[in-house]
Length: 387
Image 1 (spheres, rainbow, N blue to C red):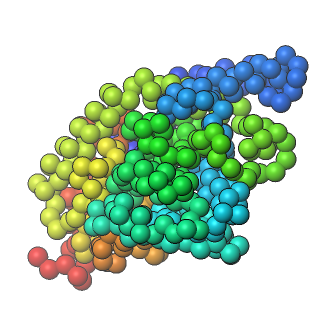
Image 2 (image 1 turned 120 degrees about the vertical axis):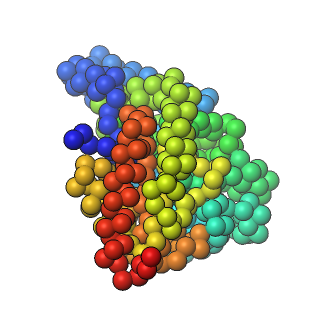
């Protein structure tokens, strides 16, 4: 029986066009992009072409504002630490939210060890930040606000444009972690008004291990990696040429096919939510019903553990997740779900279902049928469940 991948937020397959471009680049035997001979110039031109493609995807007017990185986590670390350290003469206070990715949380934890102070604001039951709380949290010594765009566990999209209006008025820099949004939904850095935005290649079917940071011209940023003068002196180290070329092609395809992809993903999400009550009962859908990523459903099942559901579905060749891949293996309940008011037990019974452009309506039907059987089996064994 064919495998059904409903864990696209953890990994996406490379599109054929991306594979072809990367294989061609490997066979081309490019030189080092920093070298001044012809092979080096060809490599540099390939990187700049990819930079332009990525810039177009997020409507970045100046491609030089794009800094390539090894992944989304590096991009987030670079933005948060780099902006904080470069602007510490103005203050050492940072504002964030309670539902950030660990890349933000742990970067801030490191900065706190260096004397920075952090205010983390709450979210509502949908996992959404109230811009009014941002206003209250900003102090005279606040230098940075970092709040993610689309949450990778519940799918909620934050009011980034409204928050950026606040930070501009307060003369505070604003970074958003958009790793799970760029290439999935339309992102326009001009409209959002952010100063820095982190993204990665794999959510839009590019290679894993490649990311990027949009950093608005004029924003002070310390390099995370010290060394050479690559990436306009913002990120040292020889670039991942083959991966960047693949990312550029994936960005072009994401830009071209954005409308059709979003429509397809929304349709699958609608079908799952509409049909779900016919298969199981006693569950909760997490995240905002309207302001949400189109490819994600967070489903909390009562009386059972999500890990058990994942393993049983895996035996039936259906792949789902319990939380983000970066937090998998942890026995602790998701801090994101707890922040929305979900109880510990229900948080442990949560599945994260994420669709891709390769999924079909039949995949949803087969998943729901297997989920029904799996939930019934586990609840029959659960001492908490009484029908």
